[in-house]
Length: 149
Image (cartoon, rainbow, N blue to C red; front, side):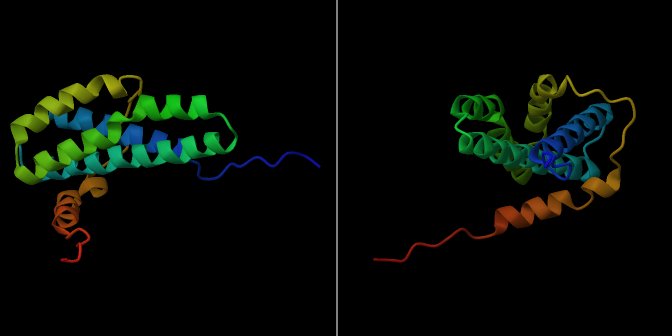
């Protein structure tokens, strides 16, 4: 009996999709000269894409852990640890509308996506419309409450 090869949805495929989304949005944001609602949606979409990268990293690392490749798993986690913290930082800046700080963060992200080749833009406004509204809703959600003593 032959080996079963999984050709479906994998964390690596999702990670590459999120990386491509990040690279395209950063490029589009760099070309824009005004900060408007669409700009805020694009930045919020970037936050969700960075989180998506973080999720796929943990899924891949757990798979390596299960095979006792803990060094490889930790190297992967270490390489991509920044994604969740950057997503949180940029998300907080969007909530506070610190747009000048967001621009500086975007410049800092460019080296992380420099290896992604973009010949044509494949993501359009339908990918990020409403992303800021979703991010605001997420931040407004109350956290778990602790009972009073």
